[in-house]
Amino acid sequence: MIKKSFSLFIFVLLFILPLSLFGDSLPTKARVTFVADGDTIQLDTGQFVRLLGIDTPEKRQEYYAKAKDFCRKKVLGKTVFLEYGPEKKDRYGRLLAYVFVMEKGKKLFVNEALLHEGLAHTYFFDKQESYQEEFLLAQRKAILLRIGLWRLKLVETEEIYISSDNSNVFHRPRCPWAQNIKTKNVRLFFSKKEAYMEGLSPCRRCQP
Ligand SMILES: [Zn+2]
Image 1 (cartoon, rainbow, N blue to C red):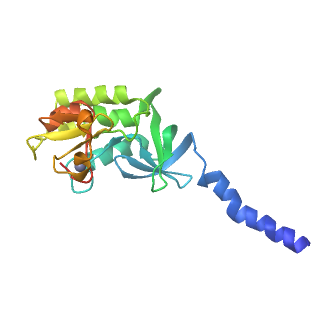
Image 2 (tube, rainbow, N blue to C red):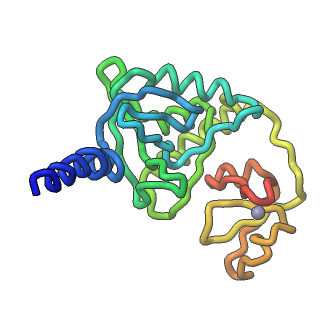
Image 3 (tube, helix red, strand yellow):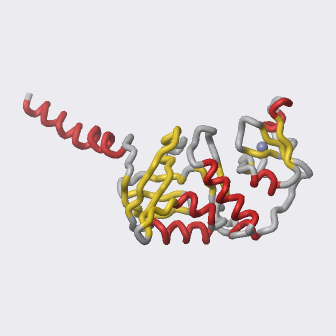
């Protein structure tokens, strides 16, 4: 009997406890131990965090290293404060969060700072997400002042791009997802700049 309850105790200690402490927990404060790229960091709880509302350049894209270096400089080894949106995790199990760090006695909003520096573009999964207005203002300013990646010439791959009133993504006209958009919801853009000025991001499928 004692043996049985002891093994139950060990089981709880080894499996249940860590799960409840870290597996499903949503830390609001943690130290950053690793920066994977401009918009993905790891906490000392082991959890990965995807910075919500933005997308930084991928490997082999221009400004990838600059975005990663900026993020590293701001948060690596530091304590960050996390705020969550309507969706707490993505399909890879990463936390989706707004990340803040104290810098010179002030709270720096890292997601927004990356947009200000032109090192990210807005990427809204969900209409209910917070800070969309702030993020869009930061992006518009970076576009108009040609800061960071907005210095690069936007190569037009199509004459026209298509979006829906109900989404935050723009497509090539031939994209199967674009063809599913109901006529009454169609929005047209004649340049990528127009779409980015509205806070839309390129479709991952048709990659306009
Ligand atoms: Zn598409």
